[in-house]
Amino acid sequence: MKAYKTSQGFVIEHQNQYFLSRHHDWDLFINRENLFFELLREIQLLEPVSEYQSLIENGLQPPIQSQEVWASGVTYLRSRDARMEESKNSGGDNFYDRVYDAERPELFFKSAPGRVVGSGQKVRIRRDSKWNVPEPELTLFINSKGQISGYTVGNDMSSRDIEGENPLYLPQAKSYDKSAAIGPCITILDEPISSDTQIKLEIVRFGIPYFTDSVAISRMKRKHTELAEFLFREMSFPSGCFLMTGTGIVPPDDFTLEVDDEIRITIEGIGTLINTVEVK
Ligand code: DO4
Ligand code: MG
Image (cartoon, rainbow, N blue to C red; front, top):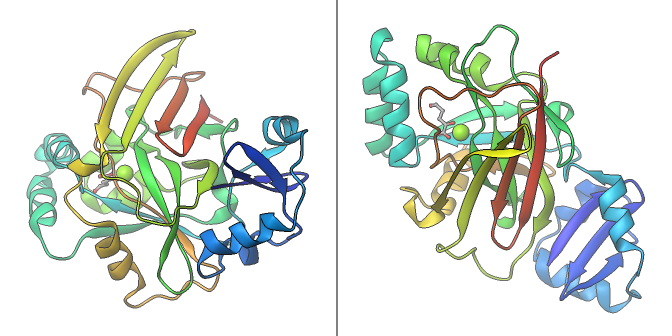
Protein backbone atom coordinates (compact mmCIF):
# COMPACT_ATOMS: atom_id res chain seq x y z
CA MET A 1 0.00 0.00 0.00
CA LYS A 2 1.35 3.43 -0.97
CA ALA A 3 0.32 6.93 0.04
CA TYR A 4 1.12 9.91 -2.18
CA LYS A 5 0.70 13.54 -1.19
CA THR A 6 -0.47 15.57 -4.18
CA SER A 7 -1.79 19.09 -4.77
CA GLN A 8 -5.25 17.55 -5.35
CA GLY A 9 -5.29 15.41 -2.20
CA PHE A 10 -3.87 12.21 -0.80
CA VAL A 11 -3.80 9.25 -3.17
CA ILE A 12 -3.78 5.71 -1.78
CA GLU A 13 -2.50 2.96 -4.09
CA HIS A 14 -3.40 -0.62 -3.36
CA GLN A 15 -3.15 -3.60 -5.74
CA ASN A 16 -2.92 -1.30 -8.78
CA GLN A 17 -6.01 0.64 -7.81
CA TYR A 18 -5.93 4.28 -6.76
CA PHE A 19 -8.20 6.07 -4.29
CA LEU A 20 -8.49 9.71 -3.26
CA SER A 21 -8.60 9.93 0.52
CA ARG A 22 -11.17 12.12 2.31
CA HIS A 23 -8.43 13.27 4.70
CA HIS A 24 -6.99 16.78 4.31
CA ASP A 25 -4.37 16.82 7.01
CA TRP A 26 -1.27 14.79 6.15
CA ASP A 27 -0.07 14.79 9.77
CA LEU A 28 -3.29 13.11 10.91
CA PHE A 29 -3.48 10.94 7.80
CA ILE A 30 -0.10 9.26 8.29
CA ASN A 31 0.19 9.33 12.05
CA ARG A 32 -2.64 6.87 12.71
CA GLU A 33 -1.78 3.70 14.60
CA ASN A 34 -2.09 0.45 12.59
CA LEU A 35 -1.85 2.58 9.45
CA PHE A 36 -1.95 -0.36 7.03
CA PHE A 37 -5.31 -1.55 8.38
CA GLU A 38 -6.66 2.01 8.70
CA LEU A 39 -5.92 2.60 5.02
CA LEU A 40 -7.41 -0.74 4.06
CA ARG A 41 -10.59 0.18 5.93
CA GLU A 42 -10.62 3.62 4.35
CA ILE A 43 -10.40 2.45 0.73
CA GLN A 44 -13.28 0.02 1.22
CA LEU A 45 -15.51 3.10 1.48
CA LEU A 46 -14.02 4.80 -1.61
CA GLU A 47 -14.40 4.38 -5.39
CA PRO A 48 -11.15 3.89 -7.34
CA VAL A 49 -10.14 6.94 -9.39
CA SER A 50 -9.05 6.67 -13.00
CA GLU A 51 -7.22 10.02 -13.37
CA TYR A 52 -4.68 9.03 -10.70
CA GLN A 53 -1.72 9.19 -13.07
CA SER A 54 -2.12 12.89 -13.74
CA LEU A 55 -2.69 13.50 -10.01
CA ILE A 56 0.57 11.79 -9.16
CA GLU A 57 2.62 12.98 -12.11
CA ASN A 58 1.58 16.63 -12.14
CA GLY A 59 0.91 17.51 -8.55
CA LEU A 60 3.28 15.33 -6.56
CA GLN A 61 4.49 16.85 -3.30
CA PRO A 62 7.04 15.61 -0.74
CA PRO A 63 5.23 13.17 1.61
CA ILE A 64 5.72 15.40 4.64
CA GLN A 65 3.86 18.10 6.55
CA SER A 66 5.23 19.04 9.97
CA GLN A 67 7.61 16.09 10.53
CA GLU A 68 11.31 16.62 11.22
CA VAL A 69 13.78 14.55 9.22
CA TRP A 70 16.51 12.82 11.22
CA ALA A 71 19.33 10.66 9.92
CA SER A 72 21.54 7.82 11.06
CA GLY A 73 25.19 7.61 10.10
CA VAL A 74 27.88 5.00 9.63
CA THR A 75 25.42 2.11 9.56
CA TYR A 76 27.16 0.37 6.64
CA LEU A 77 30.83 -0.61 6.40
CA ARG A 78 31.17 1.32 3.14
CA SER A 79 30.14 4.54 4.86
CA ARG A 80 32.54 3.96 7.76
CA ASP A 81 35.47 3.37 5.39
CA ALA A 82 34.70 6.42 3.23
CA ARG A 83 34.39 8.73 6.26
CA MET A 84 37.61 7.41 7.78
CA GLU A 85 39.43 8.13 4.55
CA GLU A 86 38.00 11.63 4.04
CA SER A 87 38.74 12.71 7.63
CA LYS A 88 42.13 11.11 8.23
CA ASN A 89 44.03 14.40 7.81
CA SER A 90 41.87 16.07 10.45
CA GLY A 91 42.42 13.25 12.92
CA GLY A 92 38.68 12.55 12.86
CA ASP A 93 38.91 9.08 11.36
CA ASN A 94 38.72 7.04 14.53
CA PHE A 95 35.41 8.68 15.53
CA TYR A 96 33.78 6.87 12.62
CA ASP A 97 35.50 3.61 13.45
CA ARG A 98 34.34 3.85 17.04
CA VAL A 99 30.75 4.79 16.30
CA TYR A 100 30.38 1.88 13.87
CA ASP A 101 31.05 -0.55 16.74
CA ALA A 102 29.50 1.43 19.59
CA GLU A 103 26.21 0.53 21.22
CA ARG A 104 24.87 4.06 20.65
CA PRO A 105 24.30 4.86 16.95
CA GLU A 106 25.10 8.14 15.27
CA LEU A 107 21.84 10.09 14.91
CA PHE A 108 21.71 13.65 13.63
CA PHE A 109 19.12 16.25 12.76
CA LYS A 110 18.88 16.45 8.99
CA SER A 111 16.08 18.84 8.13
CA ALA A 112 13.06 20.85 9.15
CA PRO A 113 10.13 20.04 6.83
CA GLY A 114 10.33 23.37 4.98
CA ARG A 115 13.79 22.54 3.63
CA VAL A 116 12.79 19.12 2.29
CA VAL A 117 12.10 18.50 -1.40
CA GLY A 118 10.17 15.69 -3.07
CA SER A 119 10.60 13.69 -6.25
CA GLY A 120 10.79 15.91 -9.34
CA GLN A 121 12.12 18.87 -7.36
CA LYS A 122 15.69 20.18 -7.21
CA VAL A 123 18.23 19.35 -4.55
CA ARG A 124 21.11 21.74 -3.90
CA ILE A 125 24.84 21.60 -3.44
CA ARG A 126 26.42 24.26 -1.22
CA ARG A 127 28.21 27.19 -2.84
CA ASP A 128 31.08 26.87 -0.34
CA SER A 129 31.74 23.17 -1.03
CA LYS A 130 33.69 21.45 -3.79
CA TRP A 131 32.95 17.80 -3.05
CA ASN A 132 29.34 16.74 -2.93
CA VAL A 133 27.55 13.41 -3.12
CA PRO A 134 24.02 12.06 -2.81
CA GLU A 135 23.43 9.43 -0.13
CA PRO A 136 20.65 7.00 -1.10
CA GLU A 137 18.93 5.87 2.09
CA LEU A 138 15.94 3.81 3.06
CA THR A 139 13.94 6.24 5.18
CA LEU A 140 11.57 5.19 7.95
CA PHE A 141 8.35 6.92 8.82
CA ILE A 142 7.99 6.48 12.58
CA ASN A 143 4.66 7.47 14.14
CA SER A 144 4.30 9.46 17.35
CA LYS A 145 4.18 6.22 19.36
CA GLY A 146 7.64 5.29 18.05
CA GLN A 147 6.32 2.55 15.73
CA ILE A 148 7.80 2.19 12.24
CA SER A 149 4.72 2.38 10.07
CA GLY A 150 6.05 3.32 6.64
CA TYR A 151 9.06 3.57 4.35
CA THR A 152 10.17 6.08 1.78
CA VAL A 153 13.23 6.77 -0.35
CA GLY A 154 15.63 9.39 1.00
CA ASN A 155 18.59 11.35 -0.30
CA ASP A 156 20.91 12.68 2.41
CA MET A 157 22.89 15.18 0.30
CA SER A 158 26.34 15.61 1.81
CA SER A 159 29.36 17.90 1.40
CA ARG A 160 32.29 15.56 1.89
CA ASP A 161 35.01 18.23 2.02
CA ILE A 162 33.25 20.09 4.84
CA GLU A 163 32.55 16.96 6.88
CA GLY A 164 36.10 15.66 6.22
CA GLU A 165 37.72 18.90 7.38
CA ASN A 166 36.40 18.44 10.90
CA PRO A 167 33.69 16.10 12.25
CA LEU A 168 32.27 19.10 14.16
CA TYR A 169 31.28 20.58 10.80
CA LEU A 170 28.83 17.73 10.21
CA PRO A 171 25.70 19.90 10.64
CA GLN A 172 26.96 22.26 7.90
CA ALA A 173 27.87 19.37 5.61
CA LYS A 174 24.42 17.85 6.03
CA SER A 175 21.84 20.55 6.71
CA TYR A 176 21.13 23.40 4.33
CA ASP A 177 18.25 24.36 2.05
CA LYS A 178 17.13 21.45 -0.16
CA SER A 179 19.73 19.04 1.20
CA ALA A 180 17.09 16.43 2.07
CA ALA A 181 14.87 14.73 -0.48
CA ILE A 182 12.19 12.16 0.28
CA GLY A 183 9.54 10.48 -1.84
CA PRO A 184 7.84 9.72 -4.12
CA CYS A 185 5.40 8.18 -1.60
CA ILE A 186 5.23 6.38 1.72
CA THR A 187 4.93 2.61 1.43
CA ILE A 188 2.92 1.11 4.26
CA LEU A 189 3.36 -2.60 4.91
CA ASP A 190 1.71 -5.01 7.32
CA GLU A 191 5.16 -6.42 8.19
CA PRO A 192 8.74 -5.07 8.29
CA ILE A 193 10.35 -4.43 4.90
CA SER A 194 12.28 -7.44 3.53
CA SER A 195 16.02 -7.44 4.25
CA ASP A 196 16.61 -8.50 0.61
CA THR A 197 15.35 -5.11 -0.54
CA GLN A 198 17.81 -3.40 -2.88
CA ILE A 199 18.66 0.29 -2.95
CA LYS A 200 19.92 1.49 -6.32
CA LEU A 201 21.63 4.79 -7.08
CA GLU A 202 22.03 6.14 -10.61
CA ILE A 203 23.58 9.47 -11.44
CA VAL A 204 22.82 10.66 -14.94
CA ARG A 205 25.02 13.36 -16.49
CA PHE A 206 24.19 14.90 -19.88
CA GLY A 207 21.50 12.22 -20.27
CA ILE A 208 24.00 9.37 -19.87
CA PRO A 209 24.34 7.07 -16.82
CA TYR A 210 27.55 8.27 -15.13
CA PHE A 211 27.57 6.30 -11.89
CA THR A 212 25.47 3.32 -10.79
CA ASP A 213 25.63 1.11 -7.73
CA SER A 214 23.29 -0.86 -5.51
CA VAL A 215 23.22 -2.36 -2.04
CA ALA A 216 20.87 -4.65 -0.12
CA ILE A 217 19.50 -3.31 3.16
CA SER A 218 20.64 -6.56 4.79
CA ARG A 219 24.17 -5.07 4.68
CA MET A 220 23.19 -2.55 7.31
CA LYS A 221 24.77 -3.15 10.69
CA ARG A 222 21.93 -1.88 12.86
CA LYS A 223 18.28 -2.81 13.15
CA HIS A 224 15.64 -0.27 12.16
CA THR A 225 13.92 -0.74 15.53
CA GLU A 226 17.21 -0.04 17.32
CA LEU A 227 17.60 3.30 15.51
CA ALA A 228 13.98 4.25 16.21
CA GLU A 229 14.32 3.33 19.87
CA PHE A 230 17.40 5.55 20.33
CA LEU A 231 15.75 8.46 18.52
CA PHE A 232 12.62 8.29 20.66
CA ARG A 233 14.48 7.82 23.97
CA GLU A 234 14.42 11.46 24.99
CA MET A 235 12.42 13.15 22.23
CA SER A 236 8.78 13.24 21.32
CA PHE A 237 7.44 13.75 17.81
CA PRO A 238 3.74 14.69 17.99
CA SER A 239 3.11 13.90 14.29
CA GLY A 240 5.83 11.29 13.88
CA CYS A 241 9.12 11.82 12.07
CA PHE A 242 11.29 10.53 9.25
CA LEU A 243 14.57 8.76 9.91
CA MET A 244 17.10 8.16 7.14
CA THR A 245 18.93 4.92 7.87
CA GLY A 246 22.38 5.66 6.43
CA THR A 247 24.12 5.06 3.14
CA GLY A 248 25.71 1.85 1.89
CA ILE A 249 26.76 3.46 -1.40
CA VAL A 250 29.52 6.04 -1.71
CA PRO A 251 30.81 7.02 -5.18
CA PRO A 252 34.60 6.94 -5.68
CA ASP A 253 36.62 9.78 -4.16
CA ASP A 254 37.16 11.55 -7.49
CA PHE A 255 33.42 11.93 -7.99
CA THR A 256 31.53 15.11 -7.16
CA LEU A 257 28.03 16.16 -8.17
CA GLU A 258 27.61 18.85 -10.80
CA VAL A 259 24.76 21.22 -11.60
CA ASP A 260 22.05 19.50 -13.71
CA ASP A 261 23.10 15.98 -12.70
CA GLU A 262 20.02 13.81 -12.27
CA ILE A 263 19.99 11.62 -9.17
CA ARG A 264 17.72 8.58 -9.33
CA ILE A 265 17.32 6.44 -6.22
CA THR A 266 15.17 3.35 -6.49
CA ILE A 267 14.10 1.14 -3.60
CA GLU A 268 12.16 -1.99 -4.48
CA GLY A 269 8.57 -1.82 -3.33
CA ILE A 270 8.66 1.93 -2.80
CA GLY A 271 9.61 3.65 -6.06
CA THR A 272 12.13 6.05 -7.53
CA LEU A 273 13.10 9.39 -6.06
CA ILE A 274 14.34 11.67 -8.86
CA ASN A 275 16.05 14.99 -8.26
CA THR A 276 18.19 17.29 -10.35
CA VAL A 277 21.03 19.28 -8.82
CA GLU A 278 21.02 23.08 -8.60
CA VAL A 279 23.34 25.52 -6.87
CA LYS A 280 21.83 28.85 -5.93
O1 DO4 B 1 28.96 10.67 10.07
C1 DO4 B 1 28.67 11.18 9.06
C2 DO4 B 1 27.44 10.98 8.30
C3 DO4 B 1 27.18 9.55 7.98
C4 DO4 B 1 26.02 9.36 7.07
O2 DO4 B 1 25.28 10.25 6.72
C5 DO4 B 1 25.77 8.00 6.55
O3 DO4 B 1 26.48 7.05 6.90
O4 DO4 B 1 24.83 7.86 5.77
MG1 MG C 1 23.77 9.63 5.22
